[in-house]
Image (cartoon, rainbow, N blue to C red):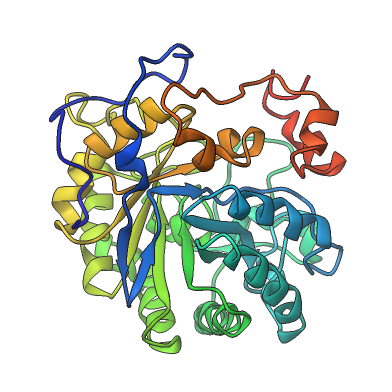
Length: 388
């Protein structure tokens, strides 16, 4: 099947994430294989979204509990499993407990993880990250840097210094070197984190990027960093390694200064730059775009990238019916976040018509039985009602 969702129920929207009593549906389309390019095929249309979990050690090395957390989801049948965001340089580290891929010492732990993920038959993907202004000095030991110097509200906000040419040359090299490490570790692909207001998104932002040189100004200048990173990563890895990019279509949370039409153009450029898949961070897959309330983002990005580039979507999907509705909108794969935390075998269980996932709240003991450590569970309390 080509990219572009599935046949049937044209125009169907995504079910609301609040619907617990979905009608009995045929889950078979979720278990169609998905050619991803580069000779790689995902065994189904279900992915584990990249999620912060704070389980790496102080040096950014993977711990066995973090490996086990994702391995359990691989064993549960997910067709694509993404790591948490992995920083490509210490000056881009966003938080304590974040995994690193900034040096060769990180490779052995990543290789152990890749081997565990392979057991379930899914594809393993490392998400590559630099926080930019969202890499605080209390974590990195230095002033954060970004596209420009700018101010935001909030007591903890640190005004970034504007990136120098040396900073930009180095971070491009860092992303490429990190991608090679992921490949050496045995992962099938990498995803460049261009969403959520992190460094590439800061350069895309008309609000945060006030540069007047070739790295700012019009959209082509603001997109130059993300495009150059993508091109360098694609050139650095082998022909069988997948390269994807995650984007925020519009302003949400820390992602600001983003215009929908600009994002659509960036997506089209990224296809020309050699991406194998596009990952849309929607936060809520039921919602239309803000700029065009009559339009759903998946359909717009499908038109932008063409019929053959796989599109992943993420955003508050819980049930098989909701996932199927996302395929109807033109997505090729659905990335689960909280649903995958509470239901590590979601894909295997969803093969049974009528199955419904466990939903919050969930106790710390029940989370522990699902390979969610106490530290991860404490972090999850940031979402009200998730942890009992």
